[in-house]
Length: 276
Image (cartoon, rainbow, N blue to C red; front, top):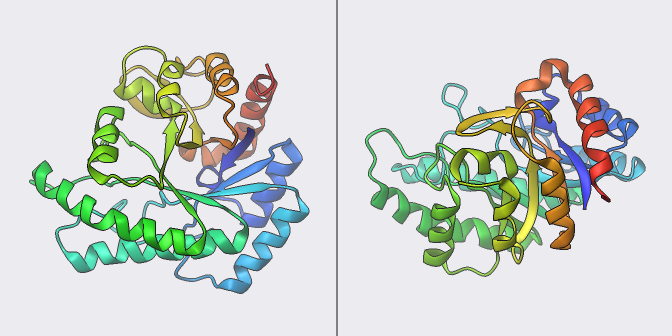
């Protein structure tokens, strides 16, 4: 288990500078979100990926790929198109994006990447959206497997698969053993009852990616540690009990304007919890 930081919270930094900053602060990993300014999968190539891998290795930073770029596919509509799109060609663009992210992940030394369902279109009914997700997600899994990359699925508030209940349904209906799990601990205060750490054990067998942010009960807003209600000591204690091995990555995408300070404060707050 190691602390990482998502590059979506370093949107105003050059990627090389972001890597160096995180290494200097003590982080052991990076959650890389390929985006318009950070290894855009449609504008970068294998030479760019190889340079990024060389720097990551020199700085001794592990890496996982996150795929939540907001406007990389459509400059006018956030997170669109997604796997639920009624237009098959639009959905193919999302699948192609994931395929490119799989190739990028393999090239930079990441063995896992994280995805989500996306939100249904306006006026869409759940049965139709579910049918398209169940039809298209296997293509993403097959492409990633061919690249040697594990896919981790994240329940995301506001999307079709927005909660642990919906995620259980997805796993049951999909029936794929190669689908692994991403859990954002802040989201657990938004969609679930009880303390966040109480929900980790159920998914211990598939948990390969953990995202960290503070949150207030019922409010989907990523906050720096200490500004919400998440019991981070409880989270880390439970992860140690479960013998979790993998990234525990801060996702503070709304704090890029103060990224250097936010990353430093988060590390100082959470690093002591890694080993109890």
